[in-house]
Amino acid sequence: MRFFASSAVVATAALLGLAQPAAAFSLFSTVASVTVPVSNVESQAQLAAQLQAQGYSDVRLASFAATRENPHPELNSALVNEPTSPVREGWNGTAVKDGETIQVYVTRS
Figure 1 (cartoon, rainbow, N blue to C red):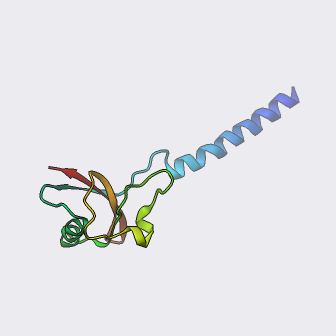
Figure 2 (cartoon, helix red, strand yellow):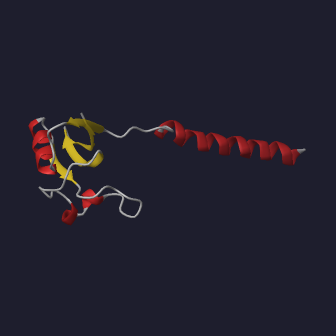
Figure 3 (cartoon, one colour):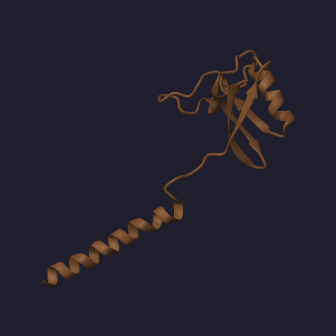
């Protein structure tokens, strides 16, 4: 009987220990992003200029979409800010506004 009581205490303590990080960090997190509707913007240079006009800085638009093998192409300086790269529907890179890194998504309007 003593074994069951002590194992119940240990199990309860373990469950409470696991619940605390979930409460502290939340099960769901949001990623800061901006969706830019574009109609006449064809190149990433035009998109970067549009973002900078809206107050964004450190615009890093990737020439290639993120993949499982390369989840952050915006971090490779050889793959970013190619002026003639076409704007893609969906994720195009990152930019900074008010000190926060924002994911840049594009929709065609």
